[in-house]
Image (cartoon, rainbow, N blue to C red; front, side, top):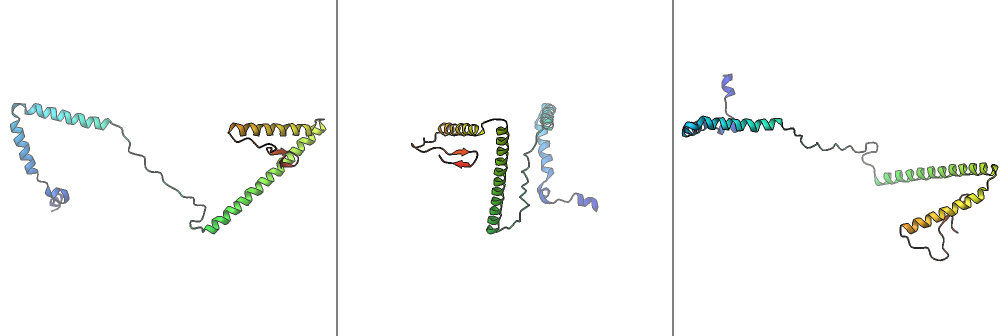
Length: 168
């Protein structure tokens, strides 16, 4: 009984009838005449050749699409107000950090000026020359990128290393 279950036709195979296929093959075999073995050999060689070529080919399928991982450190359903508050807090932290950095830079400049004065250098003259070089560099950069020239009497902002940015 179990052997009969193996031969039960279902799905696609229920419409397949091998007796017609065998009868057609027998008819073609008879019509081939004396060359039937030659045709069989050429057919077998072609089939073998095609399958051999397919077996030696190395091919890879397309890469799988990337897995998308969303940022998981933030709550999934934040409101616009929460996002805005977080952005404002981040901006305040950024500004505080920039102010602290500017304060440290000023301290370092003051230390270098003190060392320069103790070494006998004219640090005020050096600062004026540096400011003049900075103005010339900014002017050359503005001309290079095609900015319109400044009107008569207007000047580029200069940086007084002792007091910060100023307009002349």
